[in-house]
Image (tube, rainbow, N blue to C red; front, side, top):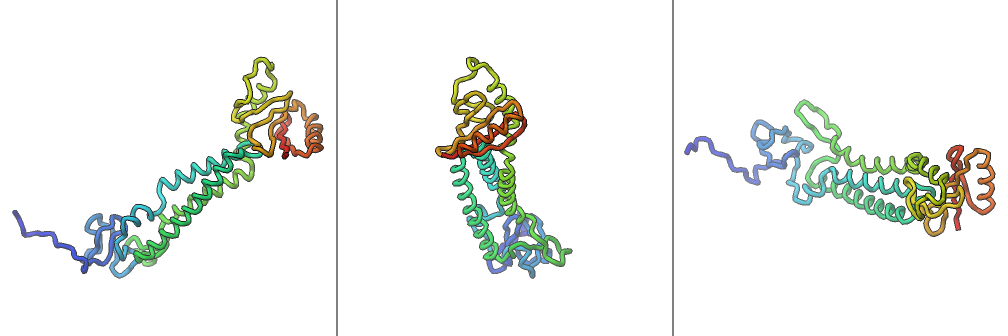
Length: 259
């Protein structure tokens, strides 16, 4: 066995840091690159390596948010927008979306706080690093931008709901089905309650479609006017009964009545 070249054992006394890429021990060897993955580091600059070895908790739970964070955030946003995809929103679905949003919010900021605490403990500056010997100044860590994506997704969903985009999209996809149901022969209609398009219909009376989305204290639905001249009469009728209406187009009016 050739013993002319032997691997030099690394002792804890000779370790000056740990690689950002693979967490391997770094020593001053004259090359200033990680012996495991070849990533460059500067022994004199704490922004190029961990000063202390990250533990299991840091590696598994406190790394920048990956695919799991985005999936959870996207699912929560979709749930939130679905809860607002009908006039007045879906009562039970809205409560579930609120609970999911609260849990995600607290867990996100808790994870973010612990992440930065771990970075500080490991001696790595919060948001800046040097990636090559040609970089004279520290640059913003691009991976840390991932932390800003979940809040941006949440804000985007809030703005979409604010402009009634989920509801208007659901109505556009269901408009033909709603019109066909109203104009069909009552004997040919499917039994209610049931789904018409993307809306759960509770009952129908002439051109008035009452939905199941209003919850316990609110009645919501659509009124098929057929003619724009009838919209003014419908508006005044619901206003006199303590409700509110708004016109979607020349054929449809949305109503809400709070008990």
